[in-house]
Length: 521
Image (tube, rainbow, N blue to C red; front, top):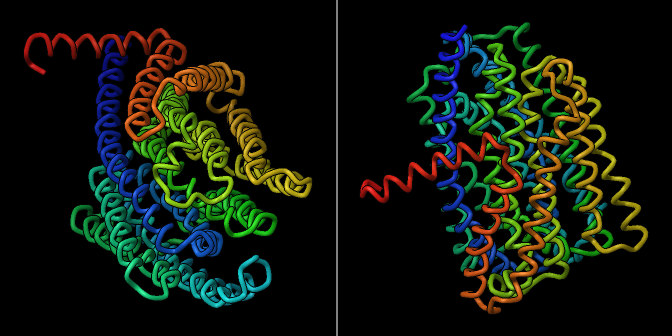
């Protein structure tokens, strides 16, 4: 027994090192893409103007919302590839890849047919768009639908990278995409028909880097060579699982697009522009945690599948907390200085941008709690129940948002509703899988939700008090953010880590200091 425990500890140490290395690659990607993306959004807003930028966000957002399906499709493929890899079955991995590739290709054709059939009717019938911009808006929708139909084939290749834990290539994908979008932003400044050209070039910036990734996968990984193979039994299993993942994505898509369309109807395209601007900053920070989840996801699934359920559960709870802590440490300085950030960043600030940005970051602090438990749930036999019950709860955001807007509340009023219901969804997920994992809602509340809420509250109060002591200019903002990252890290250490985690941090810090003092750092 002692030898078995020692062997498990060694294996987990190797897994943890792999997670740390993969996360490092993804963080490098994040910081590069974050800077490029935020700068790009300023150029695009200036080039298009507030109205056209708002039109693009609400119209293209309808098409781009289906990009959430790519998350479901990537997760489905990666799950079956990881399970086959854990068994050492190379033939099965290749079969899974082939069936998923053929399935996603058929889905892309279906999306193209439906999008072209219903796009014109949707834009002209439902959206609040100036009369002289309707034809351009329709072209934007058609362009993004066409790009989406191509993009939908890429998840099968991205899943290979994740299943193989090749986060270095995955990081290159994000950097290439960010650089391409920056080039698009500069091209739009000099090109005519800016709204249409921006949508066309943006699609190219998404598709071309993925052709490179497909080439890398084909060159390095044998399972990415498609076979002339089809199994209805395997296809049915993949269809059922991907159907559940797609339903989860559909609930997200429906809620997000309802909010976008409701904002457009009640407040106009200018407020859609404000939400689009906040999305650049919020998504940049949220992607940090998605990167962390991408690094831990294979280990959660492999550990649970191979019978190491305690380790899988521990990793799930830790991943939830750490993801939220990362958002808090990076997001709270922006929440406290949102007005100054926007004045420095943008030349023209759309209405309601500041409160939308602040609440969007708070929302992300709680939304990231959902990712690790979703990964654990996908490895269990309870996925169908979770998809049908827990994610249906999330649809309650729709009536809640409608009644708030109908009552005359401002556009950011939907965020508290969204936060509350997202927490309910996560609680429901833990409750559903409690018999399989041994961890229920009580453990999640005590070990994750309370520490996260405490760290966020204390960090915000500290930031609110400190902000008044810094100059209201770029250098003051930089100094404040640097100080708050340190303060937030200390608060996280004191209030957010348990005894074992503090001991681990102390050991690592002591080791680093010893190396520095000995001249080896």
